[in-house]
Amino acid sequence: MKNYFKLLQIDTSVLATDEIRTVNDWYNNNKTEDCSISLRSLHTQEAYHAFSKKNKELLSDFCILWEDEESNYAGICIKGIMRGKIVFISHDNQHPIPVFRNIDSFLKAVKSNRITDLYPPQVEYLSSTNNPFDYPSINRTSLELEQDSSVADMLWNKAATEKDDAMINTILSFIQIATLQQIPKLKQYIFDDTLMGDILGIYKFYGYKEDANVLLQIGKENKHFRKILKELGATPQKILWIEKW
Image 1 (tube, helix red, strand yellow):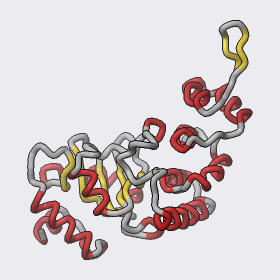
Image 2 (cartoon, rainbow, N blue to C red; image 1 turned 45 degrees about the vertical axis):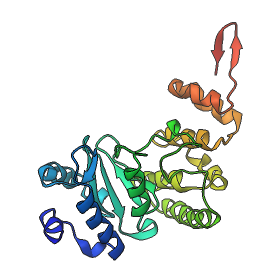
Image 3 (cartoon, rainbow, N blue to C red; image 1 turned 120 degrees about the vertical axis):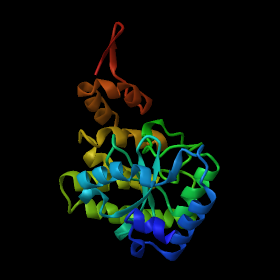
Image 4 (spheres, helix red, strand yellow; image 1 turned 45 degrees about the horizontal axis):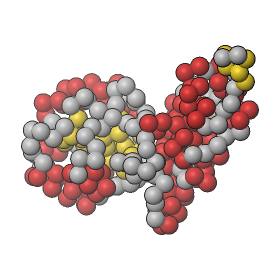
């Protein structure tokens, strides 16, 4: 394994002892070709280098260890508020999305085939009653709720000091981790073009009802969101059979 980490230029000093142990176990016990999620391979190192070079700043807070057959990646957050959490990053969606609270939780999901790829989940299409990920989740222990609420508060405060992509990434992390009681905070960002879809998705996931006038206002200029807006309680007027937003 020392050779593996060295060949893939992975700095083990950023990982905790139990994280290194788990990666060791993964390497020794998951070498089957039929597993679509695997540790990063030397065969794909050139593609990963090209991706990491293009997204150096984006990846600076993460140790990327896993890949799937579609060139999506998963890694451990190695800095700050989310230290230890597992994030997914893809070529199509280059925001680091937190999906598991730690490496052990992630490994269990892979072993049980609850997940078969590393594509960041689209919140709108997640089931609140049958969700393979730790985040977002309505099924948390009181301790998990307390811890996640604290992390989400820190993310919210961090976003207030950031701009552009850094702010977007932090708010997306907040959306994943926040508890139901924290969801109303998102209203101030609901008209942001980049965040709108994710905010509406998390509203649907938790069954949160936003002000109907706000939903109608969104529907006036965003036809592609009208289906989910009506699911959230928006009721456009009807003139004959035509809906008027």
